[in-house]
Amino acid sequence: FLILNTFAQGKEAVVSRGELVEIGGSFRIPEVMAASGAKLVEVGTTNKTRLADYEAAIGEETAMLMKVHKSNYAIEGFSAEAAMEEIAALARERGLIDYYDLGSAYLPELPWGLGAAEPSLPRILRDPPSLLSFSGDKLFGGVQAGIILGRKALIDRLKKNQILRMFRVDKVTLALLERTVLAYRRGETDKIPVLRMLFATPGQLRNRAEALRKRLPIPAEILDSQTYVGGGTMPNRKIPTVILALEGKAQELEVAFRAHRIIGRIERDRFVLDMRTVREEDFETIIEAASMISSEE
Ligand SMILES: *Cc1c(COP(=O)(O)O)cnc(C)c1O
Figure 1: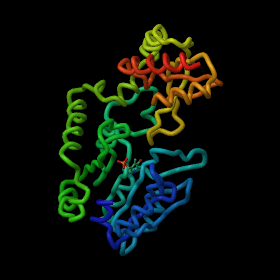
Figure 2 (figure 1 turned 180 degrees about the vertical axis):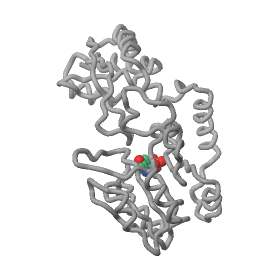
Figure 3 (figure 1 turned 90 degrees about the horizontal axis):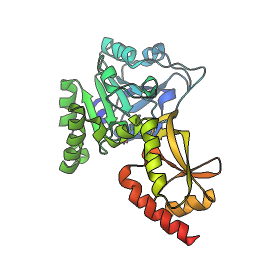
Figure 4 (figure 1 turned 120 degrees about the vertical axis):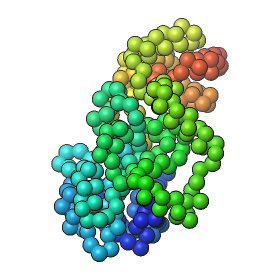
């Protein structure tokens, strides 16, 4: 909103029809653009947009070429999109601003081949767009905050926009964000919960499952399975996990655990706990809940 309002208010911003996304909570790119005062110019089709489509849309009123990263959905099959680098080069040639709404960003290369679907921040910054924005949570693993990177002259203009005051974050947010960034700088990515969960190996998960099963008052079986990243990033990408499948009626267990604020899922008619998102610190809570649930039966 801030970027569009600063650079494209009363002017046109060009976006692919395949990237007019809705993110969580019914927030829609076209509506955010309209509210910012920028005029949306759609190019291409749902499944295919080429660089020539952006080029053909450039006119007197164009201020910006914008790319929105497909973080929570996928277009597969007969499809094509222009790369950010190409869009940026075209924008610079025409004296326009190029902006990448990346949404979900991460730093270290991801395991399980996830990096193929989702570009890493260091890779993007080798040939950086003029402006880039992403969320402080999602894969970055910190607090909810909008982070904008870009050319200094453009960032300076953003800072002068009166609206910035309404969006600025509180010192608590900044302090928490600093902790996340420091963890990255020190290479302590295991301190970032989302990365710790992503990087855990099936061996570690199996050990965790063994340790929990030994103490669980409900009989359970340890099984290999697959799980999704979720959280608005990487749709249809499964990664390996280890589950504890509990003995008993799946639906009833699901409801009972949920009442104790423990969220499992049902796989092949069994209630399962996914070890990728269960921490050792959670064991007590789970064991306590399981004791209460098994004594109710
Ligand atoms: C998630 C997302 C946003 C919004 O980021 P939040 O910080 O979660 O509000 C914007 N654009 C894209 C492409 C996203 O995926």
